[in-house]
View 1 (cartoon, rainbow, N blue to C red):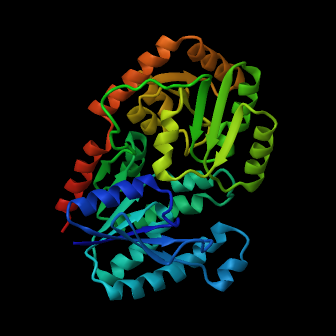
View 2 (cartoon, helix red, strand yellow):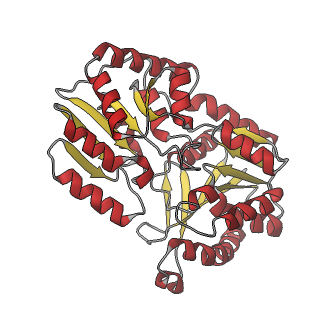
View 3 (cartoon, one colour):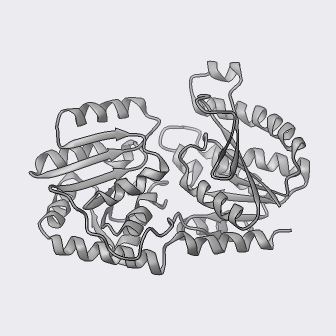
Length: 372
């Protein structure tokens, strides 16, 4: 069977989509990713580990627009037209859309081609827009309106499942952002200085400027910050702040393959998110599952989904969303190597027994086998 996955990034660093596509290929499916490359920085067509990737680019008019959100509405028109032309070259059997911004095109394709449609929601798109878009409720209403065209919904955790059950009667399956197991034996980090690692989205709700301040207040602590983001001003401020000390290394973008290598270098993973943020507070964090498969404890914010999971599984510690409390828990872990090791071992055991991609893969393949 031929699967068309649609997403609104260039598919250069999307571990969830990559894992799902690879699992389907290993099960005998042919997977093509139709990806929107807004900056035209990558080849139009290429194969990545057996995954065929076709990238769609902006029109000249779209390049003149100042905001990606404006481009998105025009891409829904251009992307759909290009996707129809692309589909004529190959007969697809299933459409699999990642997040609401891709679902709009998927619904149009389903109506035109009469194909089953899977909606894979990684986050609550509308609530993510609520941070800086006054008309964010438009997307909430749009999702509720078009979701009725979907055959199956996939999402990442229980809070998001409950959200979709409230707005539709479509079957919902949780497929978590778990990672493939790396090893089954705990490997202790080998650092001369206590090392913290953050690898993820660079954005204000992630408490990164505050993390830099906290590290500067603690002696003999080293911190590595990796990732990309969309707020250029915030990223610039973070880079400048990191350059003011030799105990923080801002490395920027890291490939999917190197994220786990970086995670293994840490004594502790940091995953602070704003508990008042309606999207991040309910979303799962890739960092949490990366920490588990690498056997590393994690610091998460109290009263967030990652924090509740951390407390439930006893795989790290939680802190209030304040610099004072973050400093407190870092010191607690720094001065208690046995606690770090015990939490790391617990994290790895939890990954082996409950949270790994091998388990999640079975759920994905079951959904596909049930689609007609």
